[in-house]
Structures are given as structure tokens and as C-alpha cells.
Image 1 (cartoon, helix red, strand yellow):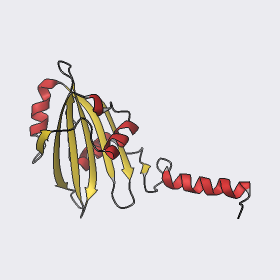
Image 2 (cartoon, helix red, strand yellow; image 1 turned 30 degrees about the vertical axis):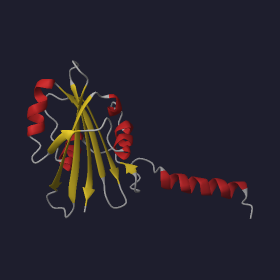
Image 3 (tube, one colour; image 1 turned 180 degrees about the horizontal axis):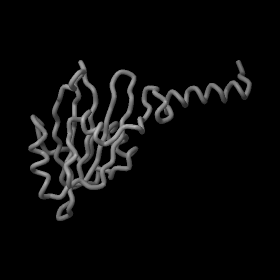
Image 4 (cartoon, one colour; image 1 turned 90 degrees about the vertical axis):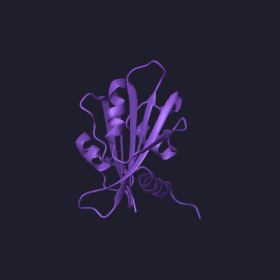
Length: 161
């Protein structure tokens, strides 16, 4: 069966809207541009320190679970107190890049690519949102290049059952 050109174009548009919904459309996978950095910080349960610079953030509405991403820079002096303030985070050396979905979302907010970082630590913790039944798993990466200040921080947080 051959579809008329208009029908084929309309079908392509529907499929494209499913794969890449427009921002603030409320459709699964759409980015919410009206969220503030404070709201993203609350969702992820990761505070943005007062001395942070180049703060970037994004929020994606999922079909069942939502995702928040943040990135910012801290001075090397502030990193240890920041990491200690993330209650219950388990820290270890990490592979050169976070999961692909996290990396893709971090690129969407214009954050530096973590794959070229020489020293990378990852901390993971799960928190409960007040008033919500779901938990949020937050992954925080701390990355630095030898002898370069400041340290880059990447945050990827997602609802988990």
C-alpha cells in the first residue's frame, strides 16, 4: 500500500513528536523549562553550594519517572565539605563517563562532557521525597583535571520504585 505524501508526512510528524516531544508539552520525555535550580536541587536532594559557579540544570517528565540533571563548578577547597554533606552517599572511583542516558541529559543542559576527566569519583544515595511515595536515586560525579581548579560536579537524579 502506498501512502499519499501528506499522510506520510503526517505519520512522520506523529512519530517524531513521540520520540522528541517539545519542551513544556507535558508529554513523556519533554523537558520542563519552568523549573528553577532550587526545585531541581530539592528533587535531587543535592544542595547547590553558595560558592558554586556555572550552575546548569534540567528536568525531564517521564512516562512514569522523572529525571533531573544539574552541573556546577566548585573550588577544590569546597569539594570535601560538599561531598560530606550528601548524607549517606557511597563514594568510589568511577569510570571515565556516567551512564549513556545521564551523559545525554547532561549534554542537553550544556554541561561539560565528563568523558575526558582524569579523576572522577561517584557518589550514589537514595532519598525519600516529602509527600511522595517514590524514592529518588541521586548520582553525583566529582571530576577534576590534575592541577586545574575548579572541580566539576554533575548530578543525575531519577525516581525509583
